[in-house]
Image (cartoon, rainbow, N blue to C red; front, side):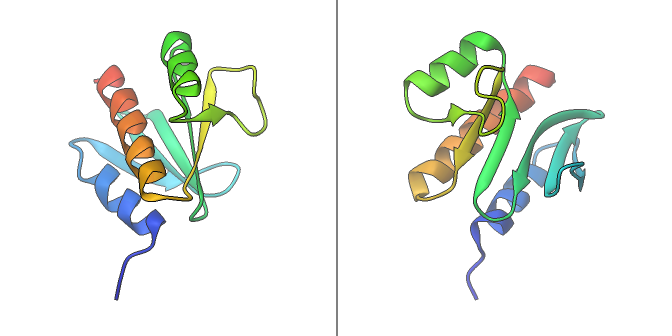
Length: 102
């Protein structure tokens, strides 16, 4: 049986030292490091995370993320999981945020 995108991401994120998960307040799963949110997954199709402004602008400019689906002018970005490239981008951005927090 193959894993869906959400399961792949959960396994990846929880393999990072110190990362935990809990239900996200707006639905989905939130990933944390030492109580600070790294990002969250909504269903099998969307990853949201808050980035420093320069990294947010870079991710939007290079197409690895889109402005957040609800707050497009904030530091939040959304990655829609439609392809393998999107999965790679979500992992790279979450890893950046994780390393930013550690």
